[in-house]
Length: 249
Image (cartoon, rainbow, N blue to C red; front, top):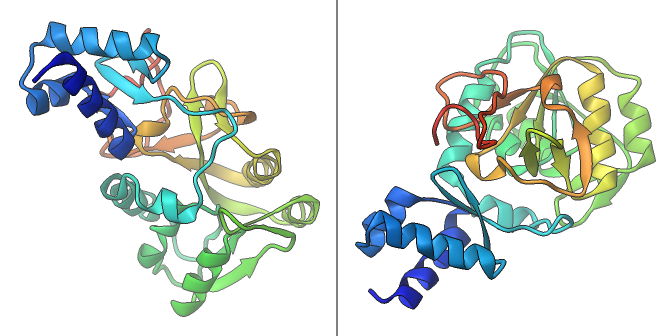
């Protein structure tokens, strides 16, 4: 395979998965490690990707965000794994906050604890929870059409009146310096408020979210526990010198 063909193949891999590892590039293109590294360097110089330890990730705009259908099609296997781990943390009689988002949505089939109360800003989440006969409170406010999330001043105000045993948040970016970030200031305000009203907070994130930075900061890494598909159990986020999570993806 010629270098240009390899590089196009790498970009296609990134388009499908957001993150690509050197060993996968070598396997799919039948090239040496030095050739793969050189391809990544050239693509980074063109502004088409960002190199990370052991591979590369897609380059996102600070304010770009996919709609629900676009998010749902990405990293489905990882999201299912994360959702199952997160749901095991929910106990009988808990009052939890479930953030809008596709990974938190995947938790709902596993939320079968008795006397559970779920507060959510996700319209799709509320509908599915009602179908399962789970006591559900949908916060009021403005509906964001792309993500089907309730946002705005009214949503934040209603959350300040409530307390949660646990909050489960989706996120767009996780970075050792800039913390948890998301593109929309209104959604960030809802997430920050829910986190502050919770005894424990968990951020659900597939590996593509690591080392990304979005427009608005939600919280410091120390304020929540990350649940990701690279780990067998929830642990606090820890970063090494290459600013990737210590457990290898």
